[in-house]
Length: 337
Length: 252
Image 1 (tube, rainbow over the protein chains, first blue to last red):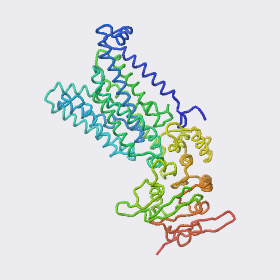
Image 2: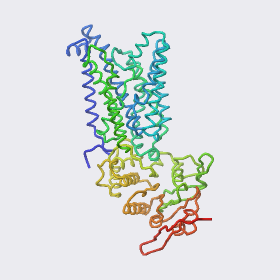
Image 3: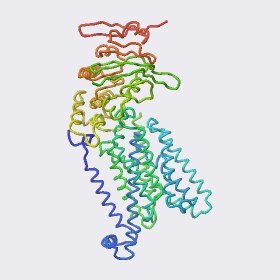
Image 4: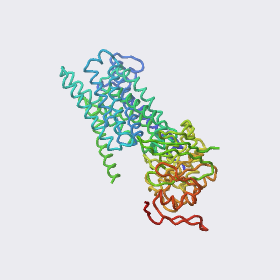
């Protein structure tokens, strides 16, 4: 009885490989950009601070962009894995079920009302509030016993509502340029971000991670259902609260700085699940790493595929993720028949 | 010595009392069968005893801190849920949740191997639990409860849907666990198996405990007619007690 991953063994090959992948993509992300710096120029500039323009490009443009890709990607992967584990439903994903759209609504309100300009933390906090409201509503409407169907319906309703309210805000916006800027921002991107964005997202992101990462044991026990998990000593009310707050903080912070980037939280746990023996607890950490790797790779791809056009990151992840989502629905349907 | 003591345990749902004033003491060594028609309150009694439901009265399990209770009592719910395609060994290993914080120790591994062997699942350890048949999944979940190695075991219709051989072997395991000095409370609809394997039966009807005693004293023609609405054949044979329901009776 050796080899396959199970509760009684904890292989570290998968996390190590993913960690290596993240490190590799992080460096690659620092070396690719329209400035066309050579590798040695880039690294010298980054480390020593020699060479004016190169230092600016590396330290003010590429480094924050790569860091944000890691923060936002890890948050999305981790949130997806946590939501799926808690709801025991592989279709749960912050973007798909309206959490990102609600966070975006909060962010748009902060931008349009001028709150964001007068108080730096208003943007992430409003996005957090939007995400929090959405997750609470979802847990209320489609708790673990609601099933896949209820969850998706609740998600559609929530996305539609948040989208309509966002449109309303833009509709009533007195300044058409500001409105179109916000529309582009909502597609999700990491282009032209600075360290201000990193510092804006970092505290809430770390808070979210610290709430979600220790949920592993509880999520594992939930494999057996709520009753059995509670009898095994899992405090369900506390787990639910941590899950709701953690996902909201992660997604809220991510949306506040990068817009709504969908499907990362769906793709990553789906791809990694077989590698950890389908265990929802072990899936948390590896999904965070996988999310960071995926977003770094996607952000590299938008720079490499069409460097002259500003292809939005969220557009690319949706193009990758939507077909997978259709595939998952198809499989759910086949299983139900 | 762990005993399961319920005193005046009641559960109210909205205004209706679905469990009223249950007082019993179950001692180590007893394999107690919880019988009664659908909706009699069997599941409610077990969940209230575990403290999983708001209740009045007192249960010696429900008053324990959650962590201690998880080490004291294993609970096998009727709903057989395995949410993810994890291995059989992983499911059974979840029974060790109350026993370790971060890493399972040698004794956790031993308990899992033991439970798998006991349920005849040793060869299934690496298989994906969700790809097994319904009856096999039920046995995996029973093995999970065994791996918890708690002095009290509460099982809600654990043998429903099992083939005859596994119904017999599972009831034998429950009887043996009681024989090893544990408290076993198992709800079941098969009164024949209840009569054969349980040392004591609790008969519930409409949320009340209407009979409590050895199978022969509980499965009387009067109780069967009034509580279950059936007439049955019951006899002591060289192979032990034999019980067979015969027909539905009308009560006036």
